Length: 181
Image 1 (spheres, rainbow, N blue to C red):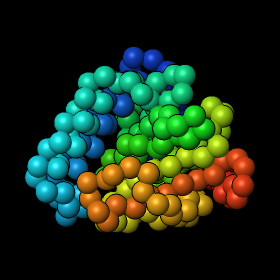
Image 2: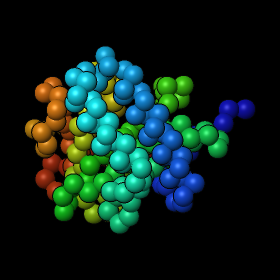
Image 3: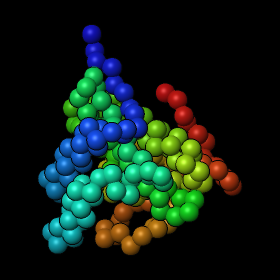
């Protein structure tokens, strides 16, 4: 019998530690997959330094009252995560969406993203933004398929070809919401 995969809001220290371990895996993946990240060594080192600080201080900006961490698990084994933080008064930012390689292909990235969007709506955000790299094809497909639209850069990304997306939760031109599987 296959294990049931759940996506849930992080609720306790044990959950935070599960996300921390997934963030560490994601950090290693980013450092090892230079064909995807395409950063110069100095830029990668700086970015990983920021990521290390995030990992060390979890939940940090992803904690209540304006942030959220989600963990996806197969049975009791953590297999994916995602984070939401406040970027502006009415704007949330999705960060650190990661699914372990052996758990990919089961629409977990989409489920985690959906949970983050639902949480952003509950927190009162009007829109959610994110950035990604052009070689992260699966992530881009998820975002576009869920109704995220390309936008201009909202920060000075060190990679000039980085892509930026937004999902409107409220207001003018709200994205078509896909809230169920």
